[in-house]
Length: 166
Length: 214
Image 1: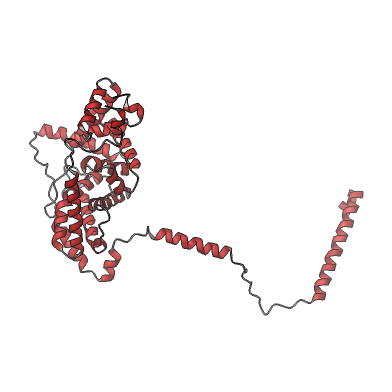
Image 2: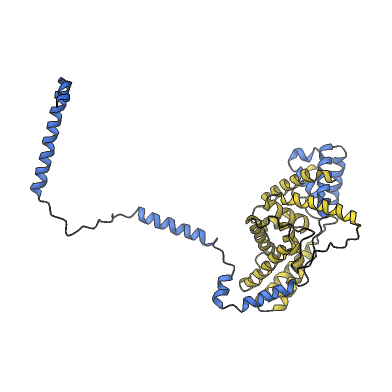
């Protein structure tokens, strides 16, 4: 084998396959030849082999003899439920509906944002009508107040004490 | 041997101990799908055959995930119940075992995620679901050997439990169910490279935690 597989990036996979005995015999032999001269691969393979052996020691518990019986009881119970309850218990998943819901949300938002006509504010019929003359008078008053304000500021610039007196 | 010949592409399961005759595997898969299609058509006996074929691997897989026999059996019942419920809509588009283990993994991971595994690991003085005190299986060991075995087992279980749940599931499928990367990826609904990454990290953690047991 030319070069160490650990340095090439496929070392982990190779060691795993070697430990799991899933390498082809010629590949395993080649790796064993490489390990005889590579301490790093040798140590890693040995550690992986230890893990593999340790996991082999974990034998599961025996299964309850009435497992099938319980399961069939549950199936029988479920079949006695009314159709709407069985429908509710079916394996529904909301996951496929999520993108559809998101797409609908985006469409609604886009429709609302791009709506050309603003929604008119409701006008109360009891609101008093304002005459055009009244508006003109109010605007004149505002102009006059503004002029007074300008004059007052001019006095302040000439004599700041005036502001104190005023 | 050229280094190219030992890359990830060629490291396929094909050797002693884990030899898999692909034709035999394909025949098994076809048989599963065929049985499930019969269940869909109302043949109850075929469901019994499916249960017979997959009961043990499913329970053992979940047991190693959740580390509690009673919970494992309860969740396994839910797995088969879901298979039965879904019989009407079953289409043999994917491997039956992939589908089965996807349900099992989903239930196991949910159970772990919900934190229902706290202080629930099987202990020797715990009562079984039948109310009887748990009996140690007779493995032909002396009491001392059994104690040493139990201590070793405790460490292995702790090491497995310390893994993030997805890594745990990947190791269980790789080590005990002898699944290939592609099938594990299908079960976990992730890419093959993600599975490799999960497994490398998991085994690295296990090597560190179990190094002293050599």
